[in-house]
Length: 476
Image (cartoon, rainbow, N blue to C red; front, side, top):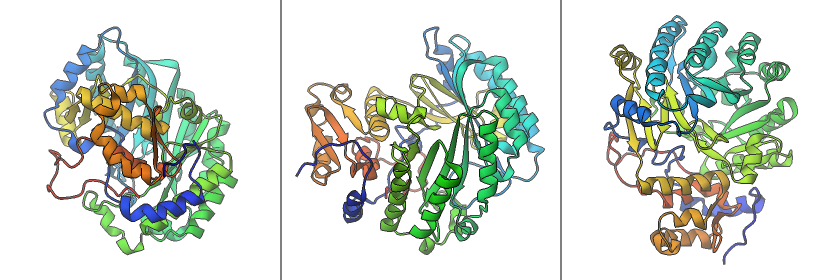
């Protein structure tokens, strides 16, 4: 029986049904921060490709979003899925800044034929506040010397409360940063010890107070469910602390991706200490009930925002977007990434930088943009990518978007519609003359829905170490 469509968060009845459906839908799948996903990038895309793409931007090109990857951390959290360099020697920053200066110059020179106006500037990591306030000031100066930040440009940074004193925020506020995101994951001591990230409520609370006092308009915190030793009661206590003590503007509540075959340090986490799939769903639902009950909007598939936040407003208007920096509202910009492993997206081409610091530096010394791999999207990729983005961000795909593949749309997507039919029967979707819409229950399985439109899924990526090895975390 087809479920009627309503746009609301999943409730307890949805969770009960989701538990029944978990054995059917719990399988490895991409998170779709890009389409196609990064494992399908190829080494046919190089620094020469990047230069060609940058130089092809004309006067009518869109504005830019800039991302700088600052990969250093003093210690490794065992849950981490990011590309990081562990070091307690902060003198490495000088070396890295020298490389960034060269990369920014090379990119700006190649991009000079088009607008150099920036609508979004994001510092991610690693731990960007591994850099001192003076070093962050210097990096910002490297950017503003070659690019023009709009007065209303969104400047955001990821910070670790354990290593971020107020002096960092004072410098960032002076430079125009107004969004700050900080990791928490879980406040339970046993969980923190298991993942090698011990952090107090007090130091997190103080940093948020400092940020607001200094003029930051949006504070985001990251939580994670599915970590070792998490239980419903323990996680509920963390949720209570976040709401009662911190009251962030945004919350990202990620599911822990246990991929020890890709991230060897995750082998330190014993698989039998992790919550089972049904327990993970229970933890996620606890978060949904806590934040929605406190007045937050349920945004995307793992984000929440206060109703006055730009992200919540964009979700309601259908203007929410997603890229390698996460959910955002800066549509129509080309994204240029700096630093090792950074991924840009310019004129339909994904461009990923070198993974190793030494090879990244070598390319820069030789005057080459340090791109290691990437992907030039086809028209089919663009259409499918739009559908996947609309499903993950806005929970619906219009007939016009489906018809971009050819008309009539039901004929163009006949194979996909056949594979979606069981999901309709299970109550995950509504398909009608308005298009495809995800139900509240379906929001718990939206990655599975997206996988139906993924033409690359099941094909062995060129970067695969083993044709049969899994490349993604599980969807539940």
